[in-house]
Amino acid sequence: MRGLIGVLGLVVMVAGCTGVSPQPSDGRLRVVATTTQVGEAARAVGGDEIALTVLLTPGAEAHEFEITPPAAAALERSDLILESGAGLEVWLERALVTLGGGERLRDMSQGVALRAPDDAAEATEVDPHYWLTAPNASRMVENVRDALRAARPDLADGFTSRAAAYLARLDAADVEIRRLMAQIPPARRGIVTNHDALGYFLAEYGLRFVGSVFPSLDVSADPNPAQLAALAETIRAEGVTAIFSESAVNPRLAQAIAEETGALVVSEPLYTDSLGPPGSDADTLDGMLLHDARVVHNALVDLPPA
Image (cartoon, rainbow, N blue to C red; front, side, top):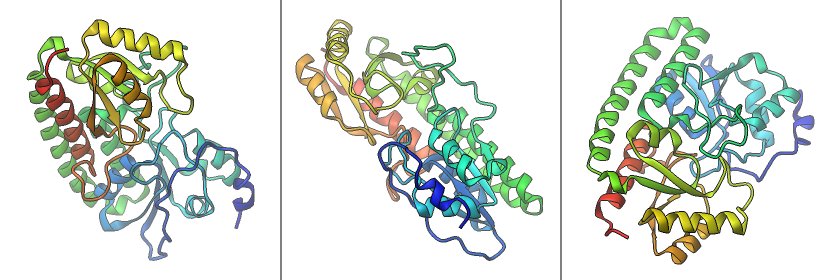
């Protein structure tokens, strides 16, 4: 098959899991989505009228993915490729150079006001975790709807109605998140996480970034001892009581910082790079956002002061 041999030579990072499955040739629109977030939006909006392949599975680190032969085959067969965008899927861009199909690629971050990460070394660096607010997740859903309608205008009514229902759920989630965040005392709104992934959430919902264990947008390299020492000092100075772990990030270093500072690593993880597993309370876009908001609320409202 065209390009399969070449793509196996791509040098990408640590392997992520893939949910690739055979696509039927029954006339449905063959759609490949990269992340669990884009996949969920495509599943909800496309319904039974698309044949969907999602490359990443829940819990996989979105920054680190290896194109496998089944994933390459799905990309080659696809009618439409939906990426999260904002620079997240460097591995996809490399794959499409070999496989071809770049004309079928659509960026689901279009129209989002992208931000620089808190630790940005360059002015051009962009934080790709934009889906972590309800307004931005809604934009993702709208972009999925528009891409599907453009590909299959004859099915536009179904795509439009299913998108409207999903957007209503995200609007309701947004109201609830703002209610929960308003209950957190201002002095307790400082957040420490495993890596700098919550910038959009913090800015949208009135919280404050204190620091992250991995001082970068991904977790491909451990922080150095000086960075960890500086973070520990900041946590003590700020009176931070909780360090939030994330579902796709090893909590080992966060636990070490907590032991040194007296802060608590919150046992319930946040979902940032991935949705939760099927059947969990975080397996949809609105569910993920509500889960994260409740974890943050419960930790910052209920924990005793430092």
